[in-house]
Image (cartoon, rainbow, N blue to C red; front, side):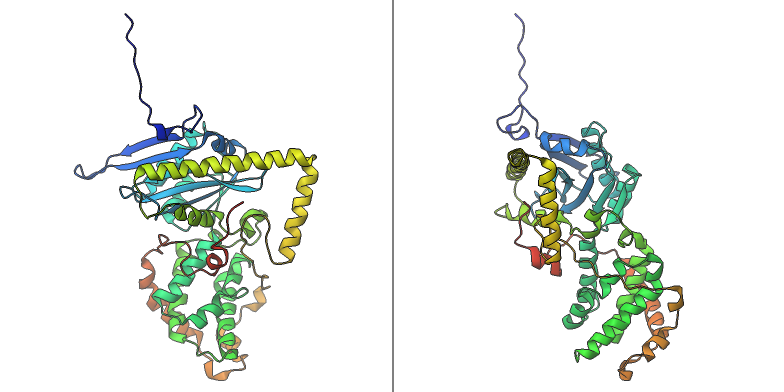
Length: 405
């Protein structure tokens, strides 16, 4: 008699109604402390969505979310791809991990690379400004351009203004309005440290005077100390400056992963569900995106010539941008018009301030430099990107109820 063996497959590891595996990989890494629990990684992806990562030169968005994560894990890393054929932003991988260390991030990227049969070769990757994540991406995909998300840049800067330095909301609104501090993201990087920052300082002071708002000089000095130490020294300017980028997706698109995270978190009735609930919901979400792709493909077939359909869609996108809206299913960061600087603009800050109409707020930027040097000790701590994405962010409020279509 030939023995019969049965291998039990957990039902949540499969795609419902198909002989396809939703569960993709699991890894455990022991820690140096033998009494500590090992680090764990578990990854899920719908096989039909995973195929989208195997095209050449894809654009990826990588970020973590926290509210929906089961208690035994630290975060859920989501890897999203921009599908150029459908113009959809598709969440492909959902990866639970128990650490935010560089080695953990590298393990995740390596597991995904292997799971795509080593065909994943992204041309650019948008992520937040978490140094271990950036370093892991650069190590795993050295030929990809890593772009720090402008969404996260503005979040981090706004949060420091408000919570660390106590700058009043009225002054923060002036600084974060289009065409003020965000000018630093679009000008030539070589002008950022001197001419660019000087221009932003002067603009904030001038607009405060025009609005009858008292300018918090000491607090702003401390903020600029943080800004220089963090965004000019800890990170390279090109990490967050989009000057000269030809990729419209990177230069204009707000991080679609942030909006998806809000949708993902809303899908869970309570924070930190158990693992069964977590897998059920991400499996349903993945199935829905497979259906969206099928609907888009079917719509193209019904309309006929795909190229004509793309032209019509491109025309709508162009019209929407001119009107200040967006029908492309993705919120945009409305980039400011770059200020034109030249080497001849290298004049002292005191000279530039003497040109201001309001003489009573003229300050010597040598004092700024001194205060900035004194404040660098406060910048040794890293910016915290673990808070919920909508916190202290105008863009999040504007798009909080949008749904990726």
